[in-house]
Structure formats: structure tokens, C-alpha cells
Amino acid sequence: MPKILIIEDDTAFCQMLQKFLTRQGYGVSASFNLKEAREKLATDFFDIILCDVRLPEGDGISLLSKIKEKSPKTRVILMTGFAEVKTAVQAMKKGAFDYISKPFTPESILEVIASALNANGSKELKLHETIKLSTISANKSTNKIIGSGEASKKLQQYIELVAPTNMSVLLIGESGTGKEVTARAIHNISKQKDKNFVAVDCGAIPKELATSEFFGHIKGSFTGAIEDKIGHFEAANGGTLFLDEIGNLSYENQVQLLRAIQERKIKRVGSTREVSVDVRIVAATNEDLTEAVAQGNFREDLFHRLNEFSIEIPSLKARKEDLMLFVEFFLKNANAELNKNVNQLSKEVKQIFFSYNWPGNLRELNNVIKRSVLFTDGDIIGLDAVPQTLKTESEEDELGDFSKHKFEKERILKALKQTNFNKSKAAKLLQITRKTLYNKINYYQLEV
Image (cartoon, rainbow, N blue to C red; front, side, top):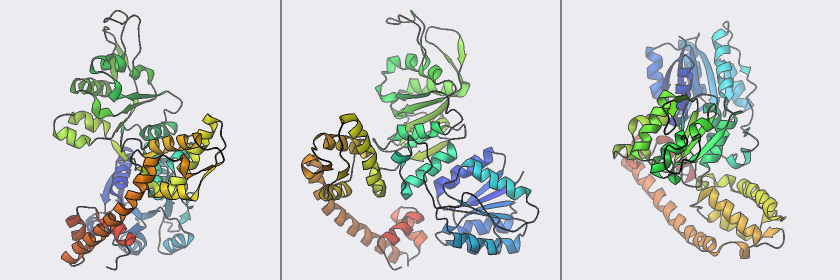
């Protein structure tokens, strides 16, 4: 069994890639930093090393020459979200086998690994066809809603990685962030793309009717069952079943759902005949399911069944660099629906949009755009068309954000001084990841 070492400081992405490659039959180890990687390399041999170019304590290229010196037969494949020709040439000189740009598809990473394993001693870097500036290549129906900023690119990267597998996916995010859109994006590039996508709002199903809704019923099985009915599992057979707000299901319904997922068989209410079903489960929640499990409100075994992969959907506040792209998308939809020709925001409205926190996320933005287009006579949305609450809260948020940033900056500096500028210890003291600390140090331009 070929052995692979992944060196990647993005923990979520690293674990996802590790699970994916393990399922492909490889023996996979993971390191989240250079120190862990060096310890593993000192005691074990790896056929392939997948290493991120940019790491908090250094970079993959500086590690490359040491790896090749100690283990010439090991193939090193560099990964990065910042593909540059200069970096590729530098990697080639130091003996990298290949270089792949994020986001990459499962097929492309498997192709590179297979090529590395089949290579006959060549150290030459093959500039892989995926080396290019990172762009979004999502399904046409979803690419604009996903965006092209860093948070959006990471989201798309996760979608493209997990979609071709059969793994269950748990989407975590605030209300209105576009969890169903993400679920559809996964379905649209999956093996099930030609089959049904069935979306179910678990929070809208009464406990008493949940069994019938999920598994169907036969005529006369209960009062009101005037005809046979197929349930959501049968409707989605061969395709994808999207279970939104999964945390709202009663404990009893959770038991029934778990059995259906495990056994891949269901029984309609009132029937004794088992029906085989094959569905890909994508679930979503805006709650902390780990807390619900700890409190006994959500079954732990069901949680692990649903959580083979988890993807956190970023809030709109975390995707401000994509704000105008989303505005254009919703403007186009609103114009078509309302028969209008509004094509932009005034300068003042833009400022309000960028300073507002958007607690309702993409859903709120869509509603605001639609309302503003309705109230606009010309082709530019002005202040008069924007809801007053948006303007008022934006002014308050500007002052609040200033105070918040000032406090956070001082808190980070204090933690760094307390730990004698040891970033790992400071991150633990602040209860954040080391990568988050590095990002904040860069954001506040702290000299440390």
C-alpha cells in the first residue's frame, strides 16, 4: 500500500483530503505544521508527500530540498492556492515532482499521485494543467452565488473535493448563508447529478407526520391516508436527499432516520414490504450538533453517520469581498422578476452595504435588493430605496466595529507579550488557531 504524508495547516481541508485518499486505498498520515512533519519524516518512509507551499513556520519549498536529500525516491507534490510560475520554477530546481493549484478536483489529485507512483526516477517537474490563477469553475447555476473571494474559493474547493465521493456531508452555517445552494452544487457535480435532488425542511415537519414524509404510506394506513404515497427517500432514490435543519428532528425520528441510512431499506407506513433505497445524504444545521449530542438531544451515532465530511458555510460578513458579485446576481434576478432595468447601487448605498453586518446573510441581501429594485424608478438604487433599518444599523456598526477592532488588537498584543511572542502559546491563550492568529497579525499589521 503506497504511503502518503499530507503537510497542510488548514486542518479541515487536510482531514478531508486524508479521508478521501484513505478511501482510495492509500496509507495516509497528516501533519498540520512543519515540526510534526519533520518528526514523521525522521521515523518513517513515504512514497508521496503532498505539501502546502505556504505554512506558518516556513514554506514547503524550503522543506523540499531536505526531503530529497534524505529520501531521493520520495515524490513531493506541492499544493497552493497562489499559483505562480516563479514558484513552480523554484520548485522544479529543488526536485519537486509536480505542483497543483487549489482548488483542485479529486480526479486531478488522483491523476498526479498515480503519475508520481508510476514515474521511473524522473525528478523533473511537470507543470500540471491545473497550475493557473485560482478561479471558480462551479456549475453554471451556482458559480455566481458561491463567489471568488478567499472564503468562497475555500468553500468551492471543499465542494469539488467531496462531491464525486459517496460520503455523507454535513453543512454548518448561519441561517441564510446558502446551505441548500451548496447542497445543490454538491449534487450537480456528483455521480448522482442525473438523478433527483430532494430538499426537506426537517423543521417544518410535525413529529407525527415525519415517518410518513420520509418513508411514505399506503392507503388506509391511518386517518387521512386516502391514497398510496411515496416518501422522500424513495423520491430521492439514486440521487441526493438534502435534510435541512436536521437538528429539529425528534429523537424518535432520528432513530428511524439512522436505520434507513444504515440499512438502505425503508418501509412505508402500514406496509410490511421493505423497499431498497440508495441515496446520498447531505444534511444542514445552524445549531451546534456536538453540543446537542453532549446534552442528549441528538443521537451520537446519527451525528457520525451524517458527518463523514463537514463543510462550514461562511457568513456574508466573512465574504465582503464578494458582496458586489452577489449584488449583481440578485439584481439580475430581481430585474427579471419585476420587469425592471436597475443595474447598480449609488455610492452612498454601496458604503451602507459594505458597513452593514448582514445578520440574515445572503437571504437578507436578496430580500433587500428585491425591495430596493421595486422602489427604484431609474437604473440606480439610491438611499430612498434602501430600508431605514439598514442605514441606522450601518451607522451603529461602524462605531461598534472600530471599538471591537481596537480591543482585539490590544488583546492580541497583550497575549503575545505574555508569552514572550511565542505565537503557538499566544494562540492557545487567545483560544484561536495559530493560522487565525497569523491572519490577525497581518490584518492589524503588528510588528512581532
